[in-house]
Image 1 (cartoon, rainbow, N blue to C red):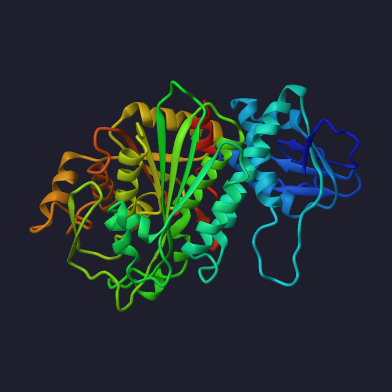
Image 2 (tube, rainbow, N blue to C red):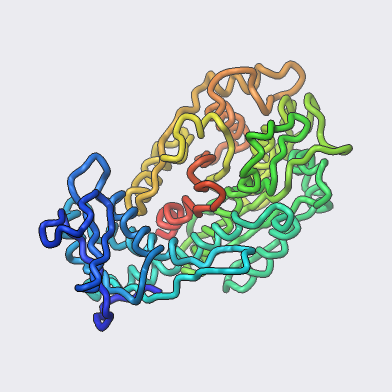
Length: 449
């Protein structure tokens, strides 16, 4: 639990630049040392190639994992060292790390070690509202992490459809609809159905709607929800199968963003679409070189069944625009290995032709300390998506070239005349086999205003 200005706690954490006050303090940047005589944790933050904020995150993470008792954080000692960053951002980082590391995550172990200590931040009372906002925001970061972490034998499309219907229905003003195969067929969402063909579970498209700004535009949040991605008939090799339960992360993120905004009573109109299905191999699975007519009327040649994410996103985007009258569209997806190779675990790739959308996202990310990097969508990428299929309007997988950009280019054909931004978050959303709930904070900050 996080509190502010509850100074009666026995233990404390203080930030220092070095170990001059006690040689037993580890002088390594970002290190944490507990001195039992003074009941004090010392966090070293010093000039180094590692940024101050990264040192703060690493040290606090280690502190929370090994906390011995209720502890008071000396906020003043931290902001005196990190004096080139707004104190609100530093406060956010502290709250983020505490919430993240103390979360009682999904586990199936018999022996569970939970962190239940109080951590107090000794700071001015003006941070009270910011604390309340951080508690709400991080509640849904952790909700996204839990959605990510369900094992694939439990976390099926039916499971997510039922869970989100139950959870989101409890939030005032949030309308919840779950579309299954019959409704998807009536809506001509044939690309979603094509991906779902090999599954023994129906697709579940979860739609969350919220209207709290009568004169405002409607924002669409579209999330890829591939509950497990085998690659289909273009079967993944075993080394790339690990972690494919996380291919539903985009949908987990957009559902969590939507629920956070609604619970915060944000002045916004939105429709959030989580497209849950798996991509399996089987007797009825879609075949490579199949041609499918999308919801917006364009035909797509499925040259690679392992490029399925863009297929479900395409129909989801069209649904939001044509059925729900969206004006602005964001999609979030673990979409391509190419973007993961380009940026690794350091940042999410962003593709948009709208500078204003990128600028606002970048500004919000500065406040949340999450990283994004803009990558291009050129006319040549769009032409390649059209020209690489002889028989259909588009191909879902180009023969060569930058896979992240051509995937984003494919999606632009479904955005019609709307402002559109695509986030490819393939590697930042998990560490090992644990979900991170990445992007929820930034999109919450961006859209709550």
